[in-house]
Amino acid sequence: MLDSIVTRPYEIDRKEYLAAMWSLGLGRRLVISGILFLVVTVAEFFLLGVAVGAAFAAIAFTVLAAMVGLRYLWIKKQLYDSKNAGSFAMRTASFTDSTIHVSSVTGTETKTPWSSVIHAERRGAFSLLYVSEAQFIVVPDQAFQSNEERKEFLALVARYTVWKGKAPALDPGS
Image 1 (cartoon, rainbow, N blue to C red):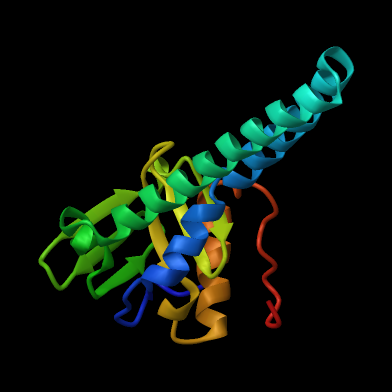
Image 2 (cartoon, one colour):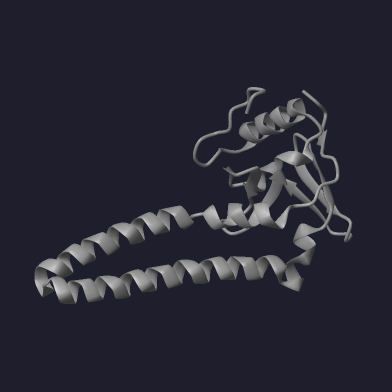
């Protein structure tokens, strides 16, 4: 075990981040919306007839598509909003047995004890360390200097918090 794991300087790629945030909870909402859409559509066909049911189905589908599109645009706007620019600045992170220390070139420094991390989650090429239900520390896989260091980080995370969903594999091929 290393005394600490220190990342190389890294930036968070906005496109990859957008893909990760898009998938965050949206898949479950889309599945539920899709099931409700099918149930309502079938009920409309039986209760109102084919012509009226088809019209309601078209309207419901349009509303669902608009909701998904607006969510995507909102997330994209957040990425390029000037108040969030510091979130994508060059930074380094170090992980010890007691704290997570992140410092950026903008001068922002945060020290978070592991006890403040609620859970961790994998999204694409990112590990998200949640300190609340809506705030998390983003650690991209590219930040680590070697696969061994990445495995060391994943083991450290597993020691101090729980992985939401499937825990990442620690083998060299992952």
